[in-house]
Image 1 (cartoon, rainbow, N blue to C red):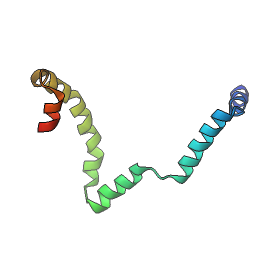
Image 2: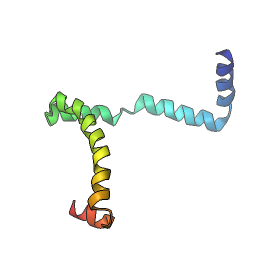
Image 3: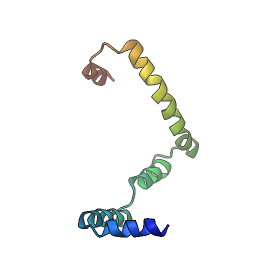
Image 4: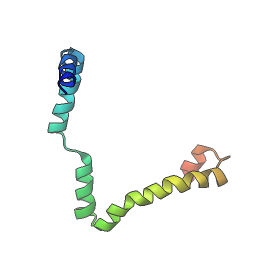
Length: 87
């Protein structure tokens, strides 16, 4: 544990890494995450039920598995621009 701490301190002595980590820490402290705003907006403004918000990642996981199969079966020879234009 002590060795790892000394290694981190040694790496922080380099100005480039020091600036990078300082920026990341300051950004984390000063900028809120947009996920918090989206969650509030979905619940309070759009009034989407909490159950739907919690089940949505499951639907996305299923779609990630199913849509490539649909693409390879019916849309493999179709140009991407046509798929996006008609969707």
